[in-house]
Length: 355
Image 1 (cartoon, rainbow, N blue to C red):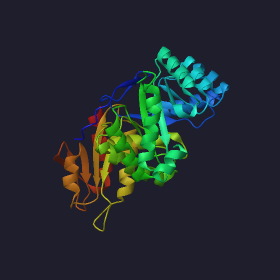
Image 2 (image 1 turned 180 degrees about the vertical axis):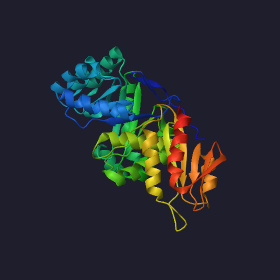
Image 3 (image 1 turned 90 degrees about the horizontal axis):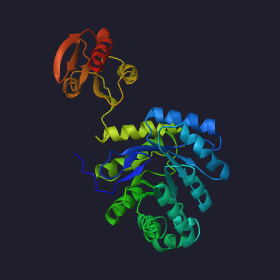
Image 4 (image 1 turned 135 degrees about the vertical axis):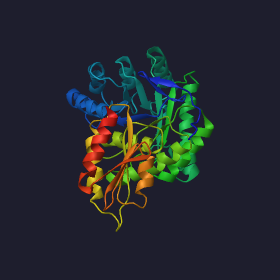
């Protein structure tokens, strides 16, 4: 069992981050924030997929003015993504945003930082210090020979100290790179430097399978170390896919037990059925029926070599065989059924378990 690193707890619009709270799943809208209806549709889709905190870009006054309407019609916390203009950050907070994501070093001098902190304290708004490989200061890049982990950590800590100087401690930190080893090492270094909650992820990871592989490699390594309080799987494309991916990573790491988990073998010459179709059908039918917050592990195994053992480890499972298919429930064989009826029988028994 993974032991989580001890971090401070902050509250983002009712969602606890850090301090032993479950790792929360985040995503970001790719709509124009001032297009309120489009943004609301996307947030609704993200929330339905399981997103727990959503971020949107606030890059002009029209975006900031859209926040009250958006906030009034959503049920998950809203984060404003701000760059360069401290006045937009203040407008976002005054309009009800639940959290800010920005770097205090790129909004001007200490006086502007103080203005932000005073407003954040007045409205009880936490902030995320977000440093990426592409945003580290030039002097740090020269010092370390590029966007190395040490450069990212030093940059983030410099920004943290700016806020701490104003007696502000309601912070989350992220230090993302598009380079997986650098990302892992940066977060490991940061976890030794402070106890603020860490938002983990790989930035600019691309789309499709490459993004999923990068995210799983980096976040899996960090989560098994107990590092990470909230996460986003950054992908080029539909952000709903980010949410599904994050939930699957957490499930694979044993940090979430919800939904349907399918265990199936890679197949070989002994496989006596179309296992891919069988596994896909089981996952599709059961995933749409399982109640929210419930978890069911289902094994769909292609032959008698590893099939009985894996099926017995699942809540329910089937091991296909030419002479008949073995159904397992709760670790025990409870029935043998014909090959052609095995998938129907498995689904029917699984549905009964969910009732």
